[in-house]
Structures are given as C-alpha cells and as structure tokens.
Length: 273
Image (cartoon, rainbow, N blue to C red; front, side, top):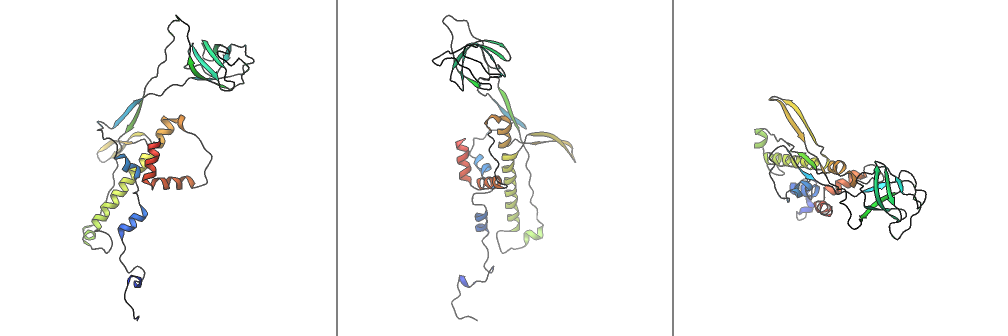
C-alpha cells in the first residue's frame, strides 16, 4: 500500500488502454500508399476498355560514331557505325576536336562523304569511336529540296488490372466488444482497405505489363497486370536510365522505404521529373 495521489505515473505497464489511432499515426504517418494517394489529384478520365494508352513521339537527335580513325584533315570519307537519320546538308561537329563538317552524301549504311573544316576550326585527325553530333544544316542558294526526316509515333499501352482484397469475420466476433480500437467489423474493413491501397501502390511502382488467361469456375477468363513506373522507365525510356555503382546490401530498399513513407518527398520527386 502506498500513501499518495493516484496519477498517470502510477499506472502499471499496459494497464492503461492503448490508443489505436496513435499507433497507426506512429507507424504510418503519411499512409502506406502515398503515390496512389497523389494520383487522386490527377484529372479523371474514363477507360472504355481494358487496354488503354496513348501515342508518343520521341525527338530525334542525329549523331554518328566513327568506326575507324580519320587520319588527317584532308580525308573526306568517314566510316561510321551507322548513317541512320543522316541526310546531305547536315552539319556535324566532332566531339573531340570541335571541327564542323558538312555532309554532302550518304554513300551507304556506314559511309559518309563530307566537306572538312566547315567553320572556324580547321580539319584535323579524329580518333576512332569519336561521336559527331548534329549542330544544324546548311544549303546553298537556289538549292533543291533536301531529303525529309520523319518521326514515327509509337503507341504506349497499359492494361486495367483488377485488384481484390477480402475482409471476413464471424458474426460472433463482430458482436464481441473489444477494449482497443473500433469494432471487429470496422477494424477488418479498415485493414482490408489498407491492404487494397498497398497492393495498388506496389503495382504502380513494380508492375509489369501482362495479358493472359486463367481458369476459374466460370471458364477461361482474361487476367491482366499493369505497367508500373520502373518498367515504363526501363522499357519505354531506357535512354534515361543511368547505371550507378552498387549500393550496400539492403540500402536501396531502405531508401525506397523512406521515400514511400514520406508523401511530401514523393510529391517533390514527381514534380521535379
């Protein structure tokens, strides 16, 4: 027995009822599906079929890479890996010497004829594997119409993926009173909603495009999965991927975990892309 005033410091461990809301706030301060949540801020459009997408054009930036050194500043035939997207009249600049050359003929798939020193930098030897970038074009007065270039649009598609999560509790369990949180029924509904949002969130990041079939009690039915952000970047925009050094084991997952737990940070990353 103790002679004192009963206060909150007197409670033995775990005697006081726990705050379920406080626990959730501590574990999930910004929710477990911030990217999915941010998507609700986008303009809504109706998908009229399971397959949907858009057409995209990627700007062409012509360049050539030498497949053999250019011996001196007088040589006018350049052997390159590919002459794709190169037309007569283009001005190319050597990445190593800054010499500009004027393309006068595309001989075949790997050979160009050029005018050397087409600018203030005189022609000189150029090493093997040097890249020459397009820096414009130039034509004489009363010239004939040059060969045209075109950009062919590509269709980027995605599928509508069906997400299903179930909550289930017996009638007796639902009728049973609990000392923490809401009713069993409400808690199960809330947990199911969290699982549902989490599954969508993971698909938004790691999903891979797939259309297949699966047999159930009604027969053979279509099943589809959506493309996630990682697959869109690595497959449809592979030129934007830069390979860095390896991170220590587990560090990449920790960084991703931190990112996914901070809604504001993800919003900043998305807006900066």
